[in-house]
Length: 92
Image 1 (tube, one colour):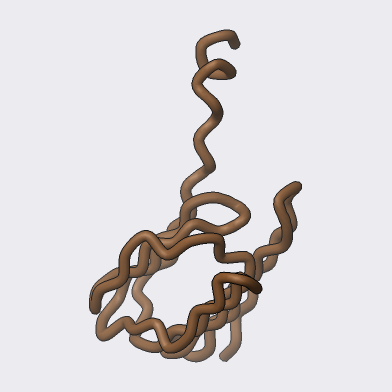
Image 2 (spheres, one colour):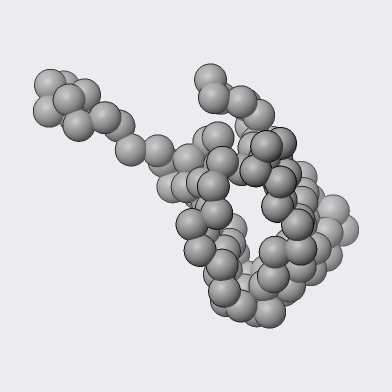
């Protein structure tokens, strides 16, 4: 079963496509923070993104286009909101 999530923000488009919890394709990835067998920590155009699972591996990442392909068994996908600038938080 294929699942697809897409979002568009002011910074660009982001899309996540996951096939049978074993292969995934992402667009709108700005940066790879860390990668190990149990988690992928990324920054997308919609904020932080953490993928957890087993035997996770980045197959291909193109920083110019923001495309990332990965393999492994996915247990969870968690988004975190982008942080507001400090001045905006101080002067609410």
